[in-house]
Image: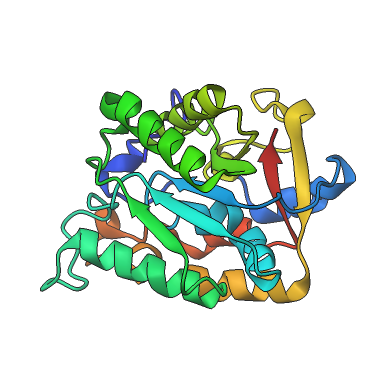
Length: 258
């Protein structure tokens, strides 16, 4: 994870995430009052994640809605998230990549997607920018193979190196194939604020979620034990996703940039 410019803190180093914008500020702003609604995407839909769990945080409620409707969904895991958290004491007998992938499969099952296809590109964690062309070609190939109606990928402005690179790769893939693209933010809710001029709100829309989809998303996020629990003793091994960060993602709506 990379920090906002000038924050002075490397969020990718496995240290506790510094405090960001409190969720109550976002709740008082209440995005749906300011953003137009859109229905769930048409299918087949290909959902790209830089690391296992990104797609659940940014789009998990919509994935639950798609699953309930029997939609055809495909997931692309660009990396296995093997670099987060470093020096973890959790599942010490297991390799981090295997832990993260297992957590993802359990989370997808909670969303109703136990049979979903997950393409693991196995790009090195924190190095997606060095392999952006390879990632773009892989995404484009899958979009063509499944005749995708929509691609959903990380937002290119999220101030996180891997997420931005995965998003740029998806942009290139969608340009090459003509598939429409939506982009979801993850860390924007941490570093931005309501009406933030760094955010292209004119391109944003919200996807309303029924209560059952929000509940399933909460259960899915809870499967990422390696991210939501401290990885050991000391502030440098605090949870990657503490409760105040998770709160940004358990809402009655999700946001995409179109």
